[in-house]
Image 1 (cartoon, rainbow, N blue to C red):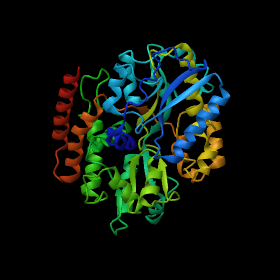
Image 2 (spheres, rainbow, N blue to C red):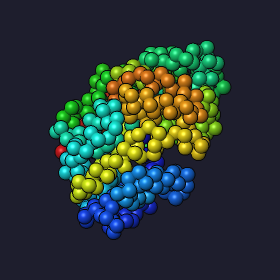
Image 3 (cartoon, one colour):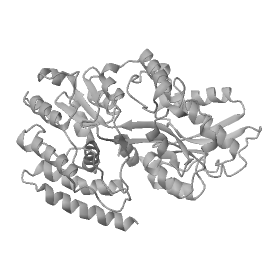
Image 4 (cartoon, rainbow, N blue to C red):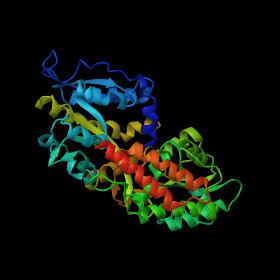
Length: 445
């Protein structure tokens, strides 16, 4: 449940199926004989700079590939959950269509995407894409898509507050015990300063509980997806740590039932020491809440046993011709999988005053990662040293659980109880939550 995804979904009501007739259900040829592909996720007109960059990319790509005609469909968000399944079932999906990581398995299961296995090896640097990412698009040895972005959660922290509290800002906490100790020192600064903040409303509490479970090496559901695994030693450690920080240490502040915007505002005001999030939160705190890039850093997930993984990518219409699939793969390679071009054109991004140097899109290892990092360093306009530890520390990533939003809703109640009730019974809360999740999973089978 990435923050931008949650916001985007709320604004999706205006998404239309404009251009649905231009699908790959015909022979895929333009009037002049070019291979025509339709692609979605063009930025809306309201995002003028992003849209102009996207249109520039199409022009560059078509010049490099004069036999391909790219027809873009704009959308905000890129995928509307209200219409996605209907478009797939109705054959109205673009040749190259956007998908969240969490939806890939279902699309494959329904046989609603083309097998692109024979085309992806032509993507330069495909072998350098992190295996945990390519595996998302793989089933029974076949590949059904390509990634666009990849994110994982870590610990965002305020370097200025660390220093003020007598902590070493270059050595952020690596365990939850260290998080607790640092939070207590930061809260000790007084004047309304909070050491550590967490969510507990609007399904976001359950989202963070999941991330914290992963950091302890736990899971939310069994491997077969049939039963809950929250009532475990790892689940108890997560809640006991939060309960101790909230009530024993008084390091989480008295205001609870927080959501992401509350916490971002706290961080931007300089009154918050730490919270869990992905790197894309940093520019949000700066742009919306007057935070400082110099002060904001991100460290790996405490414990390093696991972190919540998320992202998005592209799949290909099952009715697309081989020529269209080949053209679509070329487009995704140019737009999203090549350092220096398309979305990874860091020189252009810097000229447009977008932040350059954040640890995103976090797709590659090896030589491709080195090439992308070198370009980002060349045009960086944010302090890359603030993200170095996060970027160089490998933490196993796990996707959201099945029925994620329903499970998050259940765990919201658990998180809010622990953070608002000094006498909350952790064992009872987890037992009740486990029963509710079991029922949810049983009803979905």
